[in-house]
Image 1: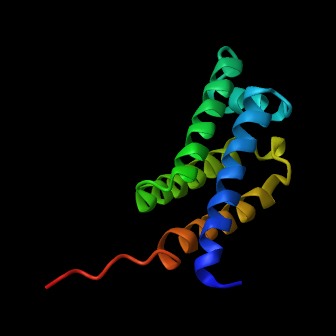
Image 2: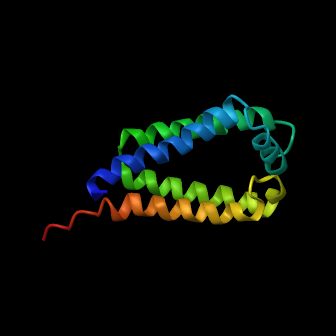
Length: 129
């Protein structure tokens, strides 16, 4: 695939990850395991509304990805969120994860994909002397 054609494909794929996880898994509650993870990490009292808030935030991230605005800031925010979320889940709720301890491997691969999308496919313009 021609590299310039790869960037929009990755943008839509990355946005789909955030939109599906936010809307289907958390807001529409199609994957109850997500609320159990939130309950384990943040406490059960407010797990349901916090899970939905996280879902809406993920939908917002998906929309930001689709917008293409502030690409490098967006990718940096995604990388920080994916790493922090997955390290917390690995340490505090790995038994609730779909692939348990392997989840961190998939998160790492996603982070590498984000880096490739944000910095390799979109290099920083050279500074003008």
